[in-house]
Amino acid sequence: HDEVVTIVAKPRPNPLQRAVRRRALAFNRSIAEQIQNVRKTLNAWKSEGHRVALWGGTGKAAALINMIGITKELAPIVIDSDARKAGGFVPGTGQQIHTPDYLETHPVDRILICTNWRARDIEREIREDCGLYCDLYVYLNEGLRKLTAEVAL
Image (cartoon, rainbow, N blue to C red):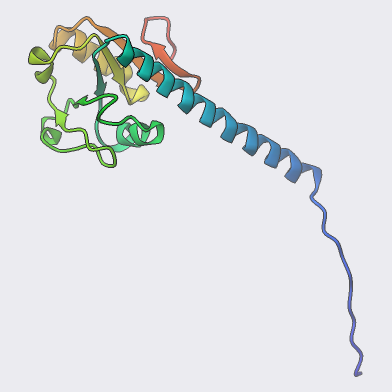
């Protein structure tokens, strides 16, 4: 029984693996394009003289801010509904977080709501509690969208 058995095999990907790889690469390209488009939009707003605030500074909002790379120079004002977060900073990008009343002395003409799952609640808070009627935007899968009644969240 002093025999050695060997086999030479060349693995090849099956069609399902190829399809998954193609879809993953397409998704990666799509995300990169979306991020680039959002940055272009924010840079255009800045060069046009728009004052932009971000609404939401921790958790999912901070993840979005970091994923897109929204720096202090691009959007220095960050607002959060939770007063306990005021005085803190957005992890990773460093903008100081303020309460909504900060906008009374630092008005903006556009607000990017960074948590689309709470966008309608935040919209109500901005309009009714804060009395602000600036343009509101939300990040959806295809990029930034102006928040209107027709936008499905």
